[in-house]
Image (cartoon, rainbow, N blue to C red; front, side, top):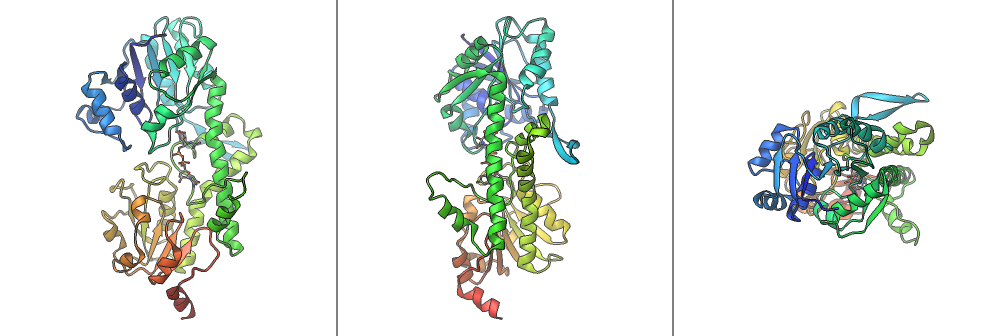
Length: 446
Ligand code: SAJ
């Protein structure tokens, strides 16, 4: 199947790079978003998200005339739905007295409804948004069929999960293998034809529900594996072991690959997607549920670590470094770092956070505009995100910038021995081992 014009609904972290990449590969693309602010920013040459290389790509796509933007769709050969699927913050389900989160599918529903007036015979519709199993056939298909056309007979319908890693989106979009699940084999083939415009990785065809499940399995697999790393961090602390050392040694086994513990699991994917399985089948998902709980409790564990480092939290001034959900991105959604800061504030600490990728931070969190401002007058430095800028900090320089002599490293970014040498008491998430270094032993004797 040949595609001259496509319509991409949703211009966020996935939709905008996808629309721009199709455009720079010669396809006429209409990018649609319901948020007028996003449209204004894009029309004025701005960008509402941070992703390496995206600015240049969007500029090229707009300048070539191949990418145009609008608040509503137009007739096209294909429609791609790339809108968010968060969960409800004010509603939850319950199974065996345990609450679970519910997927908010309103954006998928309204984007699908917006396509109906423009849907024509022979079109292709692809859902890319991460969704609970059977969404394509149980939610999207019936809405599209309100047009009077039948999926699989009159138009093609497919699900294709996005698997790009924030921070690496532009490269992974092109290089990653792509799974396309059709409601019929012909629909999968139509989807494969479309993405072959730019995808260099393998394009693998399957059915729609398998493709949905593949996406959820990938992120759930990672969540469960991070949960076990986080549980190991608590065990290591109890048994006087350094979890990072123990993991490095365990990973020398040819069939073991333990992930890294940290302040918790954030972002809009891994901390969300496993709930889609729990919601769809709470009776079959005790392990997935427990892993989610372990990871969600990790910010609390960070708070107890800071409490241990400082004795008490009341009135203590803490410089919190990093609020993003992971290193070198500006995305603060579902961030465990932000959650840890909120818990510290609730416990009476006076926190000043610094987030180099989003200096304005988040509502309710007192922010510093620079590293030196965050460090001023601090009692302790709490490292929450492994941003490259933070990993490069030198203990001796920092010692001259702040009265703080306590560091709490939750991401294993700093060489504890060097910080101890520079006069800091060092606390590391997942370590029950005392740090070597003169200053530490002096302080402990005192
Ligand atoms: N994290 C750890 N320990 C680790 C790895 C990650 O605590 O060893 C934390 C991170 O700090 C972060 C969270 O987990 O808070 C998630 O980060 P991530 O880098 O693992 O993943 P995301 O959410 O940025 O992107 C994931 C990717 N999925 C997988 O790796 C299976 C990506 O490929 C998906 O496209 C993306 O979700 C998505 O959109 O679903």
